Image 1 (cartoon, helix red, strand yellow):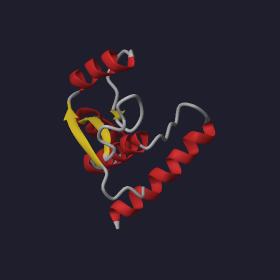
Image 2 (cartoon, helix red, strand yellow; image 1 turned 45 degrees about the vertical axis):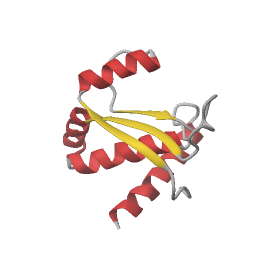
Image 3 (cartoon, helix red, strand yellow; image 1 turned 90 degrees about the horizontal axis):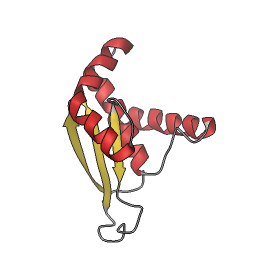
Image 4 (cartoon, one colour; image 1 turned 30 degrees about the vertical axis):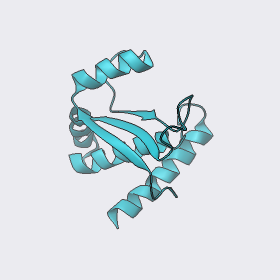
Length: 116
């Protein structure tokens, strides 16, 4: 991602906690698996330019989704973490199918780096 000095925080929560964050900050109902809060955009982005932002992951979702996909919770957690980090860098899978494909391709590349 060409950001060797970037910093981020990772918060691991349960479904109830991520549901509260989802409702409060994104105005969406129900739990989700990962939420990213970018800090490199907006009015105060120049205060701490190395701070990428926060990634919040529901460990309950990682377990549940890992079981559904027949992969380990750790592998699903890695996928969610990379997904959240990509959001911190401005990737967005909800704008268009092309953006979604671009994000998925980058996610696959980063998973390969992580595993090797």
